[in-house]
Amino acid sequence: MDPKDRPSRATEAFFGRRRGKTMRPQQAAALESGFGTYRLDLTAEPPADLHTLFEAEVCAVHLEIGFGGGEHLLHRATEAPAIGFIGVEPFVNGMAKMMMAVREKPLANLRVYDDDATRLLDWLPQASLDGIDLLYPDPWPKKKHWKRRFVSPVNLERFARVLKPGSKFRFASDIDTYVNWTLLHCRAHGAFAWQASEAADWHRPYDGWPGTRYEAKAIREGRRPAYLTFVRA
Image (cartoon, rainbow, N blue to C red):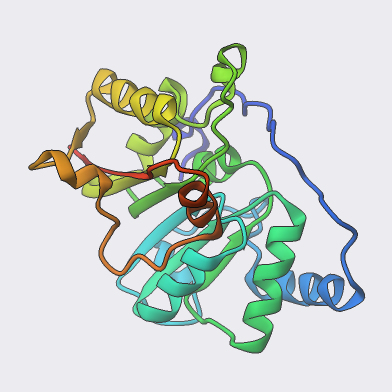
């Protein structure tokens, strides 16, 4: 992609945690070896065809931002080997867990990135993705921190740039204020049409949904998850 066609705005600050508990030696080893196979190098020019990023022959490319422990990403990449998946997770312990899993069961249709997702979004070519998942992102519940939420006008513009027409942006959360926030921001942006034919739709998990530990915690604590789907116009 010609540099002049890339977004000119600066990358926003990343507000989430980078590290948790000290990793065990086998986790650190899996992380180092896994990065050699799966980590994307954003210092290189992005390929015109993202399909070439993967060892497997893929017919579509999906992005999951903030995959946490990787339950959903691993499930989808395993169940759909003809789709390429890019997973972003800056939290090193979550990435280490993912690299431990793929050391045991390698996935030829997976790539990962361990830094700010906005850098990756700005690196990707225009209209190159077939879907974006943002599942249980940090809700930043205090009103003074809402500006840190990943769903924002500038990031929705990033989504609109890299998603193909007709592709989907999926958002799941158990925090009502963030669900309403996302609905309002997507409607205001104009490039995303919310897909809901009846009231129960947004409380119905996606087809093939494996569940995540964040979802399980929310349900235990009495919060009802919402699952939103937006189609890129």
